Image: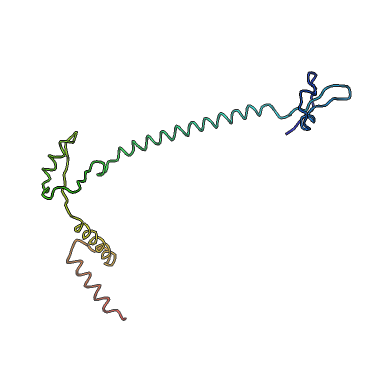
Length: 174
């Protein structure tokens, strides 16, 4: 920071504190003129600082508004994407004789503002689901072993390809 000595006819030593720093900022010339040490930095820096300060707060306000806008868009976007969990109902421990989907439809329509579109009754199907998952895993593993282009839905073709692979493996020297 740059300083310069300037004439101050109205200044007195009593206006300055008694510490060394303040006393070093006050002086008297040989002709009796009172001088004070003034900061020689350009006063334009205050304007630049205020512009920076205003810009900071403007950006802060914009960021807050953007956060509110993005939160609203996120909610609206989620409402546009409907999945089965948005309108599905799972009944735990239904009566043991509750197999008829029409009875369930009549029951749920008393609570629906609109119509009940579809009712599916699936009771104790965990074993079937496990077997379907195991079938899918085995089928994918088989597809990786068989030659490319094998139709997995054609049982005769799959069995022929498996027999060919077994013959090839049996013929390989060990």
